[in-house]
Image (cartoon, rainbow, N blue to C red; front, side):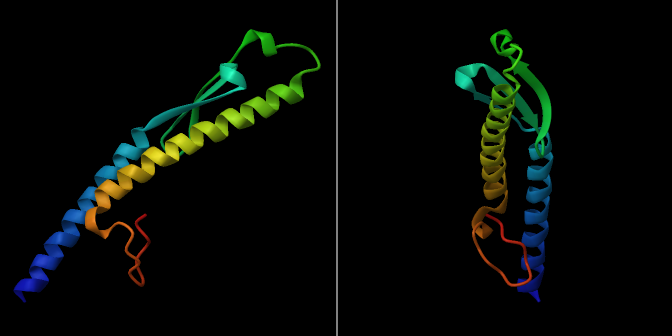
Length: 109
């Protein structure tokens, strides 16, 4: 029974670490750029866009398709960076459980 209590305490500690990591993830921010810095997009939390910066040189009639492509590319860059930071937070929170594939449990990176 002593082992079961220790296991329950470890599970509660891990749950707390995961909740802390999720709170940090909600506040995590990242930005991505495209076109050599002509377009910058800032993301926060799960991927909410918080800012878009577009260089004035892209505000040319007839260039909407290029601008749209640059926005999509900048968003993809920012999302990749945000996902990397969030994955690192979850790996840190999961500790030795990271990468384990326990049946019935979600995979923890």
